[in-house]
Length: 346
Image 1 (cartoon, rainbow, N blue to C red):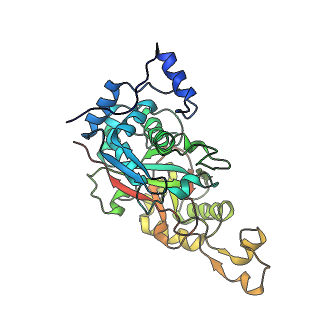
Image 2 (image 1 turned 30 degrees about the horizontal axis):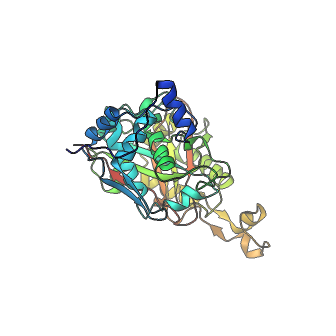
Image 3 (image 1 turned 45 degrees about the vertical axis):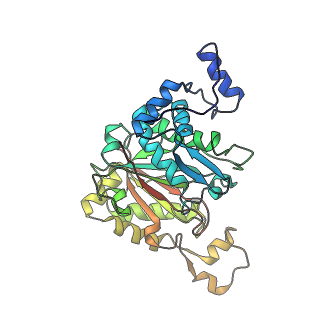
């Protein structure tokens, strides 16, 4: 395989000088990076079985071609192991999908991040965390795979804070936002099977996502009880009808409650669709909709999403505890959709 690298090379005296060069040139996310030597870049490309100049994505609004070489460089900088590269390749390919609509979530003041869910045997092989401290630190695979995608966005596509990235607040997921699903203990078939993949296939789903909203319910022993709490939080914390999709992440005891009751993923989706609706009157009172409150507004309901399947139901998180989370998507109506891609290995 042809492995000639075309990126500009820089000569530095030592490791400290290499990291400072990256800071000086604005190539970091604020944290130190691993110097991308030719040897490390080659290892990344070989692990994915791809040539350096292969185009992995073309970002239409930016007219930017994202090549395998550039992705490998940023994967090294993020601290990835070479075997993580196929996951990153699939995620970058998904970024260019018109359904995801890169330009909107990447440039909006709304401040979304790329939330990634990895499914299939590769998640377990690479040690991608699906349990305790799910969205927190402690796992190299989670931290560096998500970070690599963000560095590609920054260094290759030009999504720089205050320039192309106009996020008003942002959130910590913009450093890294990558998890695996807990397929072994899930009450439901693996999430990627809802996208047409077999359980034994490897896939990554990307989702333009706002920050996780944690909910707690230690009082209920039924799915209805847990989901009533979840829906109440979503009605209060979100703009009804604003986001195109929501990820619902069930952990610990809540996951066990669903499993014991025999509730399917579709049962959860239908319940949440019906019980997360708000009246137009309430939305107007809290300034989520414009206009004066009319008598008919008290009885006119507005759904949180367009259809039950717009709730992406995922099993992940620690075994202990009575916490789950919802993650609003970015945009309105069909502004950005989650996209799933197969992870291919040579």
